Structures are given as structure tokens and as C-alpha cells.
Length: 113
Image 1 (cartoon, rainbow, N blue to C red):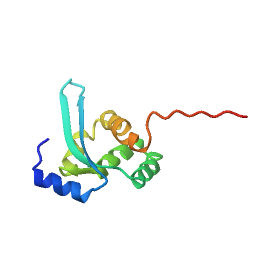
Image 2 (cartoon, rainbow, N blue to C red):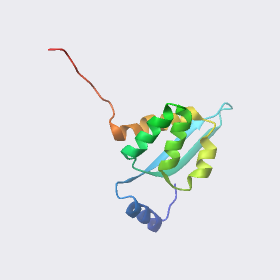
Image 3 (cartoon, helix red, strand yellow):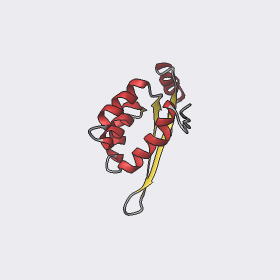
């Protein structure tokens, strides 16, 4: 992904919690490779709460809305249109890139004493 250094520094200043480079690469039904690249901001608890609330109604739309709300470069509209028909691809991005911000590889132990 190409971005000018000044623009990158401006985005870092606007999002002090952190920005990240994301990429979703997947094949369609005709085995054509699609790749979208973008910068996204670090998600916050409010993002997760909104996602959880909308996921009760429609998890596919919830994942798409979450990604759209996090993208800070380039404009999210064209990227969302490019991936909209591929929910498995952007669902995997949410699972593997976004969910770990809220805890990943969790191991729980509980026993009655």
C-alpha cells in the first residue's frame, strides 16, 4: 500500500492509540484473486459493543460494518463495495485481526472446590 509519509504521520497523530495495515486476499468462485489493502485504527470497546449488538440481528452485516468503521485510509466505501459479496473473507479478518485486540487464545480454568 502506498501512502505519503506526511499523510501517514497525520493519521498517526489523529489516532494515537495506534494504526495498523490490513490486507484481505481471497479467491472468488472463478478462482480470481482479490486483494484489498487498507489502514485501520485500533478498535475500542465501543466498537466491540456495537458489533456484538448488531451481530445478534445479522452477523455478516455486523462484520462488514465493523471493518468499515475502523478503516482510516483509503476511503472505506470503495473497499467495502469490493468485499461486500465475500462475507467469509471479511469475517476471517474480523476473527484473526480484530478479535485479538480484546483477547486471543484464551484458556479458562474453573473447578468447584
